[in-house]
Amino acid sequence: MLKKYYSGGNEAGTDEAGRGCLAGPVTAAAVILPEKFQNNILNDSKQLSEHKRNLLRSIIEENATHFGVCHIFEKEIDKINILNASILAMQKSLDKLENKPNLILVDGNRFKPYYNVPYKCIVKGDSKYMSIAAASVLAKTYRDEYMLKLHEEFPMYNWVKNKGYPTKEHREAIRKYGLTKYHRKSFKQLPEQLTLEI
Image 1 (cartoon, rainbow, N blue to C red):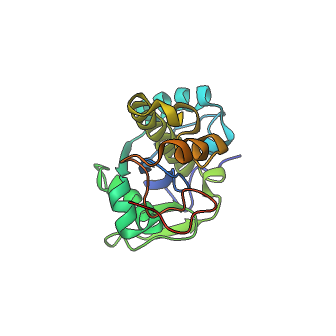
Image 2 (image 1 turned 90 degrees about the vertical axis):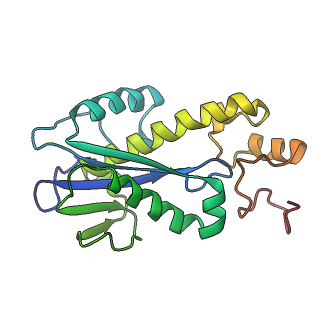
């Protein structure tokens, strides 16, 4: 059973999606839920079907007190590394909240100070707190939606299915067709890769 609050109301949960992908952005969301919010389906987005995630996205957007979503794209990821890009995405999603939270609940174990707002890093937080679970659903659905658009431009990588993750099929396509402008050049794209021709 997910907990509503860590210490009280007006808490923002934040999470990211796409950290381990070979292509596309890392996407983060931040969500403040109202005190009356209840949902029995809500969970870590990785535990939910695509249908349930999309259903929850509408429910979260309609009921959240505030929410924000942010993409950090490949060039920035390559420049500042994926950990820094993930934290930046979370902080930029917090920037989009119209109300400053009293506390930030962060999924994972790494974050950086955000103005003077206290924060708490919680490993597997998306399966423990409602606001983080809600953020994980928004981050995942917004990122998946973006990858569907990229799939139309480069259908041979089948991003409609793998969303940029390092599946066998995705890596075979990289081997066959090379890299696109959406691939993260700082990532090890192929298992046998030592250097990358770019």
